[in-house]
Image (cartoon, rainbow, N blue to C red; front, side):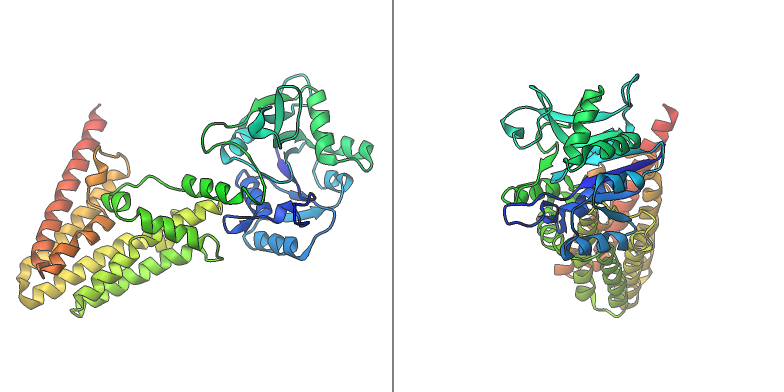
Length: 401
């Protein structure tokens, strides 16, 4: 069944501007709302607004530049005319930043048999949710509902100048809509936008964007750098893929530096590259536009790191390390790639300690201080081989079981 969306954007904040234009994690609230619903596959995305100020139009243009078609409508009748028959409509209240888990659940839940099939997400009627619209003595509206498009048209035909959003909610509840509790608990649930509370919600989104840190360096060394960079860059218009491309350029530059004997310069370039893809992933998640695993820059990071390793082995082989340095570099690269293939199907226990691009780079620092590059290559080959055989052992044991 087709799924559309209707977002309210007509209420003003304390400063007299639209609440929909409050800043949130480097975007406006309306952009965050639209991206949430676009991630669900809702189209068309209609925004109910009395007038379109320049700032709101700019937000619409940014969304359209990402392929999210947003259409402004001025009243319920115009909104109803844009939904095809049989469409279900996600109604998102003005000023509500929804929880993505709630958005996903709303798209998958079934309505109530015997009525119009409406679904309404609710929060408790308590002090923590006193700003949310009341439904009854024990429930308030969480700002999300799923309604048949026919209800939008019928309501628009009868309300005149009444508030479409609230009237739709009342009619859905009166027709026996299924009331579904919204996500709850620490760091979960809808947020009612308020200028003073926005920084706290931004912090909540920032924390939620943290992914699982699967190697020693990303777990213990880079978190502070990653956190600070994400917090600064999320306010900018920087595209996350640019950070991944920068990491790739630094890695390729390091490979060239190693072949010229600029060992410290190459190592510094690699160190600078290690947090960039982590920051890019988090910014992309904050903007609800996750990086594609098929991104060429992302896929080339690993081979580029192997190229840098071979470049180091080639230089050392020609400057006192002999053929052993090159063999160690090639062995490390081969075992690392083999381990990566094994891990595609099974994640072994203790994966935090297995060979990774970031761990291999940061492990070079003490060896670089002592100019023990040959020893580094030898131990790196041993580390990669051990990690591969452990991953292979776990993979075959799981296959047997």
